[in-house]
Image 1 (cartoon, rainbow, N blue to C red):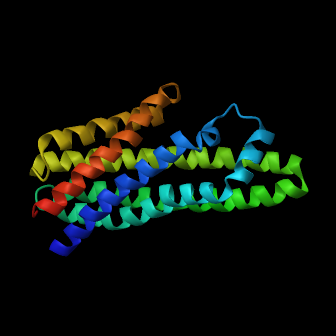
Image 2 (image 1 turned 60 degrees about the horizontal axis):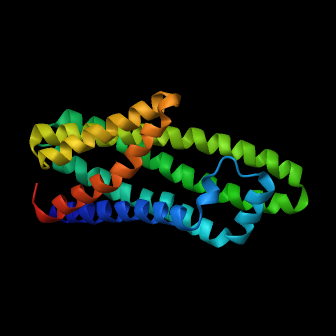
Length: 217
């Protein structure tokens, strides 16, 4: 049990690091990748130049983060279940579903990028159509995994309040960013609110990780 808590704490801190790395790389180098107004030719030119860096970006943001969640979700469940067993179980269910969607996003994004680059050299028109399809699919998956992540963070934080597993400010913060993620996902016009979940998750993971490493359940 104690070893699982330590592993979960480390996983939470690494998960926070994956998001920091992804956001930092996007802000410094890969900003054009997230620009919806970028012309297709300019996008492909940028992608071809930064292919390896984009692969690492996606691998860290999705695959490494997913591995962290595989460890963190059960560790957090074990910590929360003594005081709120039913709520902790429901929260963990959403956490495992989120983990699956995170891996799915990473695999589709990286495999799709490889296919896009290969097709662009043979048939640019078909590659442009493939890019549109990939954008649509990944947008839907990312929205789904944000919804699941918001439910996991929000419900886990609610369980933490009931059992005093974490400091109350950290638990309340988790409920707030979980609610922000739900609102931003459910209401397309409020999608900007959902970004608060992504940024807030960094601080929530960091707080959870430190708490799990420093204190016993």
